[in-house]
Length: 408
Image (cartoon, rainbow, N blue to C red):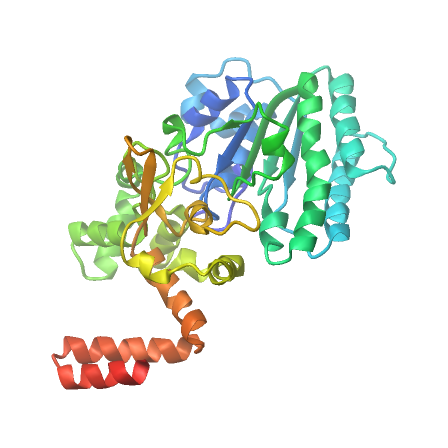
């Protein structure tokens, strides 16, 4: 199981299981359009970008036996600029500038180019693109992973957030001015921030996050689960003393249910699936990797009525994929982060219904939300909830109400 492996070349070299998504790669690469894809964390965005990277580097041998091997005939090699904003922390404008400059240094060294180290990062970025185009005679491929991480990290600090936006605005703006030198552009992230220049200035960006043609580009469908992981499902069932159907039902309840378009196509969380098969135990693996604190901060800041989680939440078609620092409605952010998913679409009112995708998210989210609202630590609230469950299941109603009164 390729747990934590986000590099396509490494995954293939080590013989890890791979659910073939290369037909999507072919489809994307066949168009000159610059793309933006929004998906929750740990959903395969980084793997998708490194797959595109290997394809544009002409590494044909890595794709043997995959769908794209029967589609591509030329396997041309292009210069690739791959930036991943995920590894660093951005607690100041200087830290963001330093990170970008360091990435550009590595790229210039790799391609044996020189530049002015003291130039603004957007100037160096533009010069890098143009220099690669002139040196190789081939247009440049740009792949940017987690473009929005600096903005998500700084949502609670408006001054810092504004400073980081001021750096990113001209940097991403280069992608529009350098269009003639670019073969392919793709950015990924969790959110679509309307105040950032890639969505205000770079208006030719093709946002495919809610495009039905790419509804299953990240995540694993049930058909893919049964096709690729049947032996693992059987082993999981045997290890837990369950039937195959019981095991499949449990997997559906815990990890399936994510829907990103109007078409009712659902996918499983790949991170939790892989961990479940590796450890032969159904646990809340995605949620255990940590819930971003900015989500709870935004819920508290906006005064969101958490009782809405008990039923369908609605959001307009215009707002579902649009969020910016300072918004009063956190629902689009909850959807884009993967804590809510599409449960229905009202075509007449152009409105989406949202809800929890599965039990992992539902119980994991509410379990983390509860201590924030009642100002008690998680161990204490888990103790109370556990006791409530035990007394109720035992039919001890007197004990149940006693625990409930103590809880409140």
